[in-house]
Image (tube, rainbow, N blue to C red; front, side):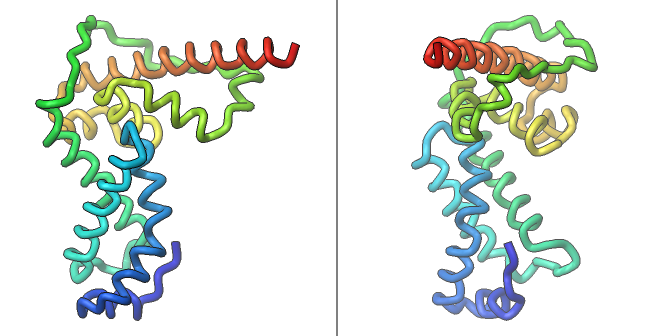
Length: 189
C-alpha cells in the first residue's frame, strides 16, 4: 500500500473526497486483517469502518518515519482487540481445559502434501471455526507475531491461557487439515 503524502495532508484538512480515496486504497489491506479475526464478513466490514474512522481521527499523529501500512495495521489490530474486549462478556463460551498443561516449547506442526495444497480461503475458514478467544489468540501469536506475554496483556488473560489457546488451536487446525486432505484424496480416487 503506497499512499501519497499529499493525500494524507488533504485528509488531515478533512477533505471528504480525499478521505474516500484513502478509504478505497486502504480497504483491501484492512479487510484482510479483519477477516482473520472475525467470524463473518459483515463483522469484518464493521471493524474496517471503525478502524478507518480511527485512522482519519489520528492522521495528524502519523509520523512518516514508519511505513503508513504498518501504522494502519496497528490501528486495525488494536480496533479488533478493543472490539473483542468490549464483546467478551457477551459472546464468550467458556471452554474448560487444563490450563496448567504447557505444551512442549518446540511443538511443530507437520504438514503433509494435502495440507500444502490448501488455499488461503480454506485455511481462513478453518481458523474461523475456532472459538472466538482461540481465534483471536492464534491470529495474534501465530499470524501477527506477538509474544504470549503481549497477547495476554492485550486480551487481559493469563499467559498460560494464551499458550493453551495457541496449542489447542494448532491441534484443532491440524485435525481439520488432515481430515480435509483425506476428503480430497477420496474425491480424487
